[in-house]
Each structure stands twice: as structure tokens, then as C-alpha cells.
Image 1 (tube, rainbow, N blue to C red):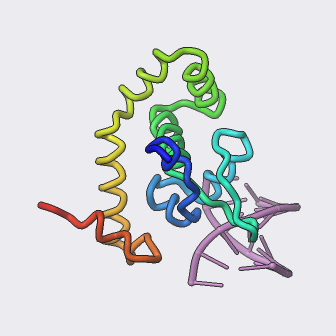
Image 2 (image 1 turned 60 degrees about the vertical axis):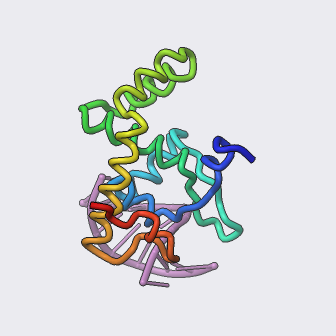
Length: 130
DNA sequence: TTTCTTACA
DNA sequence: TGTAAGCA
């Protein structure tokens, strides 16, 4: 199992993704209805999001913040599929470093407000190092 | 407590 | 999009 496979692993509940992306549960479910993401489901029908899902959600957030509508977001993803250059463009708007920074910020904010977004002990991997 | 679906504003 | 109801 390589890194790419691990990015597809169903790991987070919607509450965690909400804090990670800053999107509401309503929005996240709405984007799923529009096939922008396809999170896995547990036997109990609960959505399980992967890092790949979270990344797509962050791209959606970025485009929405830039003023795009659903149609625009769908076009962006469609463009990413047909042209590899578009993927680079998307990464340019949302580089790996930015994704990491964003995740770190969201995680720290989430911890500042409520408790750990993780039910377990994973939050220790994101301890502030300043 | 959290998430889920459905439905209304 | 937010929110409420009724479940799991």
C-alpha cells in the first residue's frame, strides 16, 4: 500500500471534516449530492472521509471563496480531469505547503475553540512546534 | 453525542 | 444555506 492508497483511506467523520475545511455539514453533504466528492460509508451509513476527500473539499472552499458558483467548481474539476496542466494550476492555487498550513491552522483553531477534533490521540501529531 | 435523511424557509 | 424533526 503506497502513499496514494493511504490518501484514499476512509478516516474522518463529518464533524472532523467540518473543522478541517471550515465548511458546514450541510455544505459538505450538498457537494456530495453534486458528486464533487464520494466519501465512503460505514455499515451504519455514516460518511467516512479520506485525505483525498478533504483536499477536494478545500479546493472547493478556495474556489467558492474566490467567488465561483457550483457550476464553476464543477468546471474546474472537469478541467483537472482532461488536462494534467490544470492539475498543476489547481496545485498552484492550493500547493501542498498551503494545504499543510491550512490543515495546521484549522487544527490549531479547532483545538483553541473546542477540544481536539480527534476522538483519539492523533492530535499529538499536530502539536505546535513554535 | 453525533450523524443521517427529509423538508421547509 | 441554515435549521428542525425524528431516527440510528
